Amino acid sequence: MQGSAEPMRQRNAAGNAESSVEQTLGQLRTLDAPVPRPLPTGPLTLEDLYRQHRMRLVRLAILLVDEPATAEDVVQEAFTGLHRNWGKLRDAQAAVGYLRTAVVNGSRSVLRRRKTAREYVPPHAVNARSAESLAMLSTEHQAVVNALAKLPPRQREVLVLRYYGGLSEAEISEAAGISKGTVKSTASRALEALQRAMQDNRN
Image (cartoon, rainbow, N blue to C red; front, side, top):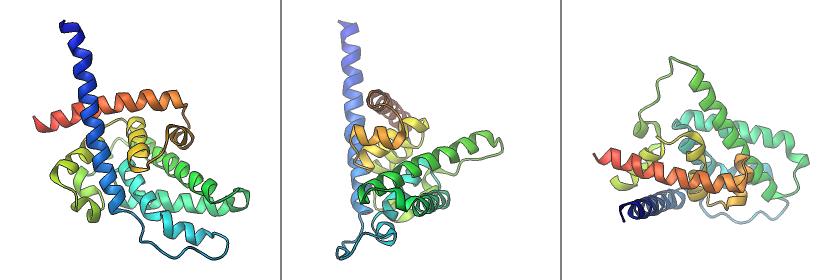
């Protein structure tokens, strides 16, 4: 009986973590939503994409690298790459997909460089993030964001893309360059790890 109760407890814990991260990142997504603007009358331009998607891409990068200035650089680099490849993209959707993938890859590069720089000291989790929308979160939501920052990079990527980016498994697979099966298993492990991190924070 004891043996069958343990998997049930793990499923319940993962379910609690999923609900917490979904509510927290959903709240951030709402706070970061772009101000509605009139739709462009002509073909979509790079400037239109910049206005519509920059804020959310910066938040995505902040959630991955924990540092606003670095996140801004990652997003700027993504738009620079988009400008270079503008003629090769089919449509606006392909351009947004390109930007997301570039932000994920740029964030990974930042984290790899940090790992090899022994003298690097990570910024304090709360102070490192842009203050505006995070300051509007409840203490409980801020605790989820802090726990998210403690996850391994791949796990954090999957949860951020899923619950902040609102992406499907197929879209996460494309943005992160991993299979759909890996997305699913990584999400499951990430939710369990997130629950443990949140419990550690409470203790």
